[in-house]
Each structure stands twice: as C-alpha cells, then as structure tokens.
Amino acid sequence: MSVLAPRFITFDMYGTLTDFAIGSAARDAIEDVAPSGILDAFLHRFSCYQLDEAMGDWRPYEEVITRAFERACKSTGVEFRPSDPAKIFAAIPEWGPHPDVPEPLANLAEHFPLAIVSNAADKHADQNVAKLGASFHAVYTAEMSGAYKPRLRAFEFMYEQLGCRPEETMHVSSSPRYDLQSATDLGVQNTVYLNRGYEPSAPAFHTYEVTSLAGVLDILGI
Image (cartoon, rainbow, N blue to C red):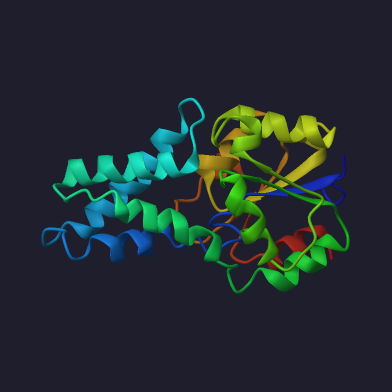
C-alpha cells in the first residue's frame, strides 16, 4: 500500500489522544501518606505494574489499576487505601484531549476512517471518545477483545473487526511499550510515534516520529 493511503488510521487513546492524567491523580492520592522522597519511586512503580498487570489474562480495568496501585504501595512502603485507586478509576472518563488533538484529528477524519484500540473500560471509552471532537469508524477496547495491549490479541481483534491486514493501516501512539512494538511485530509498516515524553523513543518500532498530532497531517500530505 502507499504510505500516503492507509485504509484505516488507528490510534491509541489514553496518553496519545486523551491527556491521561493517571500519574498526577496517583500523586494527589498518596501525598498525605507517602514517606518523604518516595513519590517519584511510587509513580514509576505504579506505571510499571500497570504494564505488568496488562500482560496476563483479561480482568476488569478497575482491577488492573487497583492491583498495580496496591503493588506500588507495597514496594515503596506507602499505606494502601482501596479508596485511592477507586477514585482514580472513577476520574478517568472526565479526562479530555491534549490541546493539540481536536483540530488535526477532525481533519484526519475527513480524509480517512479512524479507529481506536484502547485499554479503556467499556463504560469509560465512549465518554473519553466524545471529548476528542472527531468522528471514529470504530472503537475497540480490551474488554471487547479479551486482551490488554501490548498483547498481540488486542491488535488482532481490531484487524479482524476492520476486515483489513495490518499492512493496510497506519498506527499512531505515544507508547512504544504498549503499542508500537506490537503493531510492528504484526506487520504494520507505517507506525507513528507521537512523542509526548512519556517513554524513550524506540526507532526500531516506528517509521515516523512527531511531536504533535499535526505532524501526522504532514506525513500524509494533508
């Protein structure tokens, strides 16, 4: 396929399109109980444990967040209060897009069918998508596929539902760990790393690197 004519442009949502404020929400939750100097270590562990929890069999996203939070507390000596991850999970559908997203995304939707593959809970996904300001052909969640990214099944389910081959798509994500390696492994040839500073660049797993969503328009000549 032409690099400028994908059948579908697929996106990660949380972090890439949605300003996924889980780190700041976790910081706010534990500031009153965290030992001095522990906050940064806690947030790093919490992030790592979320990835680790996503690698197993599917379980509700609230459980993934809670288990990761509890493990981060245990490993850093922070008091675990079940109400803390519950508040974080409840706040997720309120989070909206990064400022650079709505206008370029709406422009892309005028030229290509767009799809999302997300680790979002079903009950949250539609609320977050509605805040993005663009029309999507389809939104696929881990709850639908029975697998969280970075597991390959999450992507395979999306391609099956779209009725296309990975090679016929462009995938855009801010996460090499959750998205771009998996998409590359499955044969996506046009991968775009939207560098938001969350993870180090991994050039082996992306074709293009941009720093705002407008950069995708430039790649496609729009």
